[in-house]
Image 1 (spheres, rainbow, N blue to C red):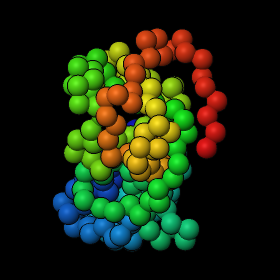
Image 2 (spheres, helix red, strand yellow):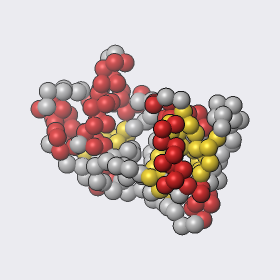
Image 3 (cartoon, rainbow, N blue to C red):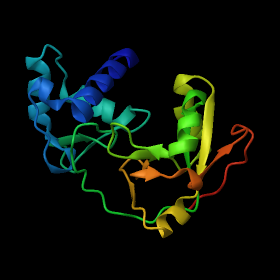
Length: 194
């Protein structure tokens, strides 16, 4: 199985488990789950055949751990990033003192004015590591990393969640709870315990 094939399957899964399940005839269950057999059949029916072994490999090797199986590997889901309306059944959890968000220069004026908004997704995505935020921000050019006063925000009544792959989620972040890290690649990593 080539890396190119795994990437192609990962993109297909993202599209249909996070955004458009109905396009291939899937109905997501509570928590975003779908029966593996149902998914494999839908892929086959829609001219994108995928084997269980390929599915297993994508779940195991996806660099962002976007997907997970249930304990018996009979169901699969995307861990977060849905634009499709679904309750992921995540429990609120207390965040670390500081979290990070990676973005790009063009978005900064709007973020500084309105804060971080979930846009078409269910939550704003945050990370506990600067390096991850840099990686996210690099997708559209030179990365800008924002430091989020997560614990202070939590103390003000904002609910935080953590997806199965470690991504922190919150509904929004007002501008007064964030600041730009000027040279994120030069920042010393902060030890963050959860």
